[in-house]
Image (cartoon, rainbow, N blue to C red; front, side):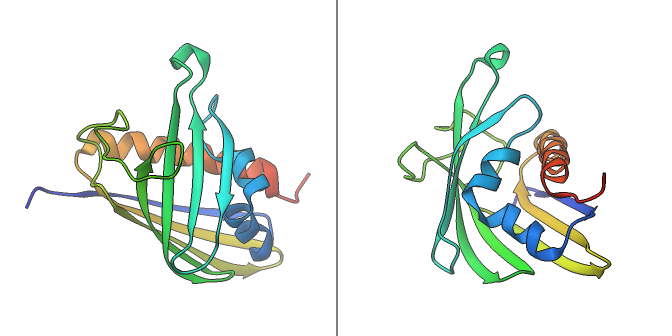
Length: 164
């Protein structure tokens, strides 16, 4: 079996656990933070239950071609407000699963990479997010995804944090 590389990120937010959970599970919040800097999220749908899915569309800025990238996060485990596990899959605009190659990212990831989001209440209105994205096929793909995720979480922090 070829080696696999994981993205592992920990981030503390100055926001209560319920607010961080809502950012992951509420379509209007997802549209605000999903996608790295310069990218937008014109679509987010969420059916938060085991067997449900979150559908998100990430739109590249014009200088990157303006393409839409669709993801379907098939939920495998949910325990609000602490645990969200899902299989990240590329999909078409209708939510039908496609291969990474069909999505324009050949050789980057497995076709159904496992993602794990764990939230921990730190007290005093603070929350720790631990996230693992499994299944990257190259170090370069892993590092690019980590950079994009860090930018997404920066956007999330601006949306949800309560400090001035």
